[in-house]
Length: 603
Image (cartoon, rainbow, N blue to C red; front, side, top):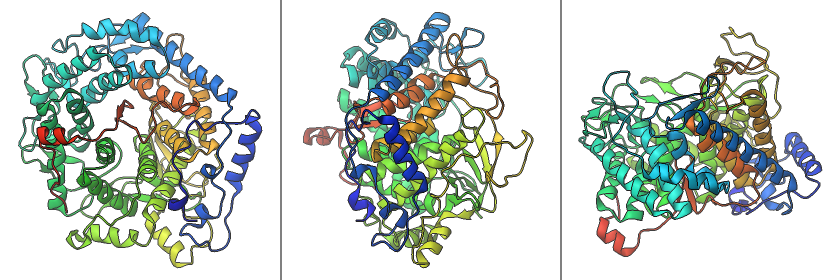
């Protein structure tokens, strides 16, 4: 049976039997040693010839994971209490000096960013104590500057994903109307940022005077990561104005995609013209990541009705799969990188930020019957046609899920290889790596014998290269370029989604390994600290505890370990800061009231 046919809906509350350790050992051992043989009836031998966890539901008893989830909750309490004790009134805690710092407007971002984490963890006392502070919050008093100048501007992107997303999710989970009123208030103050030719937001805004900051330059992630928040807010408040702003961003993206006739959106944009600027720089990492995420998630949020978003997601992922993904020569690690210039030269840099992408692919494969039928290939540019023709030889849902497995495994290996057990900010992969699509085509033309390319690397190799090493080499097939660890969530986000989609217990065990490394290396008496170098033991800590550590990193770990599923992936959509927003469908009246497009500009 083909993978796309056998992928069942996520097994709710998938759990271990009482003898959990034995079960994990057996399943994990089979997972690591499986070597498919022969030519299966499906397309992918490595998927079709092996037992799959979702075909064998796990017993609903799991005291082991209850205990582990409780440990994550205790970690959150430790981090949040340290923030309250030493940094309340500031944005974030400095967990070494025990002081506060304002990085994002001075509005208590750690509190806003983790309101929904409190609710999901049943920390009702903490949530109740936060409500009066949120109620009295003044969004026109800015206490920090992100550009180093004397003027103070709220960074639009960060303010939206942390504050506005946090308020919307906390309202959705609690029903507290005050939170919705504050979300409406904040969005209204931010909306002058949309006053550009095509409605893309500028970098920053003074919420007191509505003065704008950032000029005519924009980057993809910052101009195209607000649709979820404004659409959700419009649906909840009934505001036509809020809907119009989110809808205009979607419409402008669709128009640019149509003009470009497919492919990925570049990272650099001109806000005066509302179009890409300069030679194409393509990435799923910094400056681009969440924009790709919101194409799929906007489609899911609105009940899978806005086909233009799905088409843009497919056209973007087509190019990612055929241009940006590589497999290393020795270890068979699958990775995604970025390209620059008209020749699309690959940098072979593999960013921690890119490790959200396997989770996105798995989410799409889990929720949608992916195929290319909605795309008119005759209207695509030559590069987009090339990608289409290559991928039409494969079952797209199977391919996305295979890519998710390979990429998520590589992201985990970058943790597991390190002495600290935590992953570096950037690794540079072996430049002799082969484009994944070329390896796939060789495998397909050779009769699809053996495992799928890019799914072979599953065993950690302790990283012992000197700090100053510049070149990737065997046996690792990479070299660490930036050894920092900023308590980032992306790898854990993908591990969480892989667990919920597949039910394979190996993902839970990998998450547990990472949590243990966090406890060992980043914990301080007042919180948790970033690391300067993941290759050195004892770990060298940095004096920062980002708000997303409480909003995302610990939330994904908790959701990975608990046995219930309070935010099922087919009923909730996470914004890029891990704030869950409920899926909905526009009613007939709402479609009329908001003039919801029945169709958009498409290829």
